[in-house]
Image 1: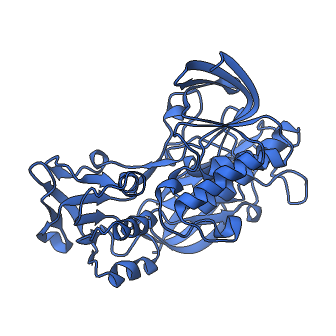
Image 2: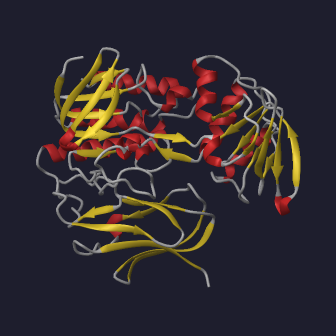
Image 3: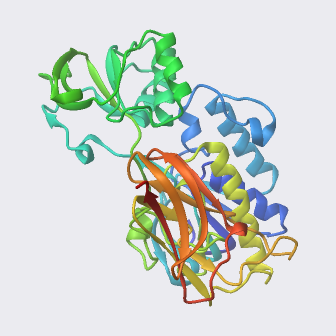
Length: 418
């Protein structure tokens, strides 16, 4: 690797959002676009998902994850995007300079703009505070998919699945494809975090689904032998199993942001951005699940396309400068809101300025019913009734908001029923 390389745009992360952003940049006439990816090939998480459905909205066809990932990689090549795999970014510096490392050593790369698209990761057992032994057979969905699809190994035969976020569907499908029969699925809430249609899949294959139930203790000498569950009213039961599969509870892969000069949002766990995906350093933008956990590959692809369009407009001098902005803060019942800043005045449709992120994206902290409100200076700008669960997407169109003058604050909160 040479000591210094200059590019127009550097994209960090070769998943759906990063590839979509890079391809859109090339379509918009940006010449020198480079993706750096620490894995050996492009594609991101879909590479590990050997089941459909991927690609319907992007390509008009349904693919398995690996085929979809290969299609994305081919798209990057077709549009002349430079790709550097097996390359790790070690540090972000002001003004778009980053430090890299690969098998040949370290280097510095300077870019006019940098797009961060590093995705998310699942929370490990240690972050879930589950007591018990430390046997073999306790993994998350990503590790399961790596075992099954990349290494053709079976980490267990009869695991307990923890969680009912959307990724739990992927976990069940992966298990069934590998001949693994889950003994059950536990969910701490009173209903599945993902849509109720999720319940059809375990029912179809005879997998019990226990609500208001938490994993209390893991047992095993050498490998998992069983678990203790705590159900409604504190009732305790023992379940024999040979593995525990933790699903969901995603957090942005934001180590680079935490170690940099960029502002980090404690709600999302990702960088603070405006509606164009622009961070506190205008040389850096962000796209995909780094912005907030968790959206689908298709959503991330479309988001990457929007951010790529914003960056191209910025390079071509068509982007509003981030000099005047309004902050967006979380109120009661809100876990996260993104974007956290809105540049004002907001460019209307047809102005020639890319719309970027067209919604305030909101998540709640817990299962809740009430009225979702957006206020400014005590004035209600938007309100709607919601019955929401954690990790389910709530969207507030920016075009419906009368955004206050620079220096003001938007507040997003849920007003509980009296």
